[in-house]
Picture 1 (cartoon, rainbow, N blue to C red):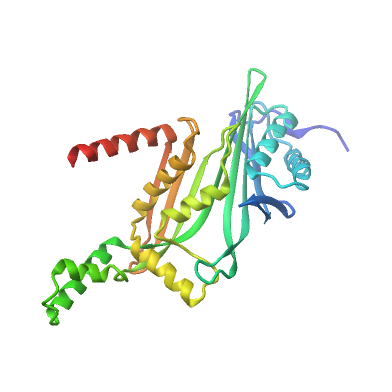
Picture 2 (cartoon, rainbow, N blue to C red; picture 1 turned 60 degrees about the vertical axis):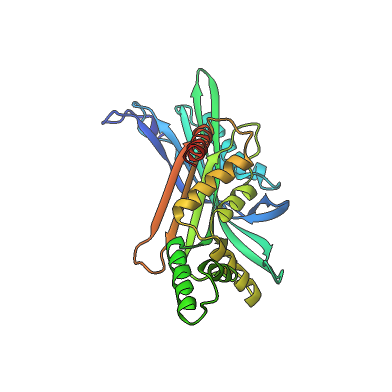
Amino acid sequence: MGSHDVHRDKPQVRIPLEKVGVVGIRMPVSFTTFRGKRVVLLPVFEVFVDLPTMRRGIHASRSYEVISEVFSEFVKSTYKIEDLCAGISTRLLERHDEATRTEVRARAEAVVDRTTPVTKIETYEPYTIFARAISKLTDSEVVTKRRVGARAVGITACPCVKESMDDLFTNRILENGSQSLTKVQTKGLLSDPPTGTHMQRCVGSILMDSPQGYNVDLTDIIRIIEESASAPTYELLKRPDELEIVIKALETPRFVEDSIRYMAKGILETYGDLPDNTHVSMRMRSAESIHKHDMVAVRRATLGELRNELKAGNTKHDDED
């Protein structure tokens, strides 16, 4: 059998390729940290390298070997998934001598133990976490950028119908003989407990840069997503817990547009030390309950842009007041 390396042949169509790689690589169970506790992960990887004009193909086995080697170095310890991606990304540049850019993506399901809001029963909540690392070789120096994020499920309560229900019940109370109450007093009675509205399950996600030397924590990212919704969700809820969640949602009615803005606010408050050039991507999808369509809101920006916009928006609001 010959030793000819077909991958090093010149291709018949000679153009460079931005990304060539292997996807769907699953590795054994490993661990990360949530709220100071070890959490089980089952990560899935996608790895890519660029391919120059005069190279026909990559050695795919080398990419798999790199993941296996780096993973084995991390797997015995509790690690941050973005650090693992960065380690694989830089090692890919070493193993693929023709590459000048590598990209690694990882996704994993994390099941976190929590307690229900009222009864304090232990429940296990699933979250999707993901990370990405891009390494570039420039002037014999490797520069690696890391990103980390999460996806969490909550509920939103519609503000429009909530306002309409307030008006409806106010008018009905006044019409049914409660003439001794003013309209203002009637609205006060309806605020506790709050009137109803339609609710929907919402899925929020944040993916943001994790600059070297700074601590971007997945626990914080999940908290920010859940707090941006009207209320969080739980796998297990007893009746008092269900009531607490519903009341919380009704007291915090939000559009998906509101949720994205509260995500941005939460990120700025949590990561005030991160540099202005830190990129963040936020997304919220609402599975509408009284429509056949869904609603989606998205915002991508740097923290510097968000800081300036929030400051300008507040200044404009103060001027209008």
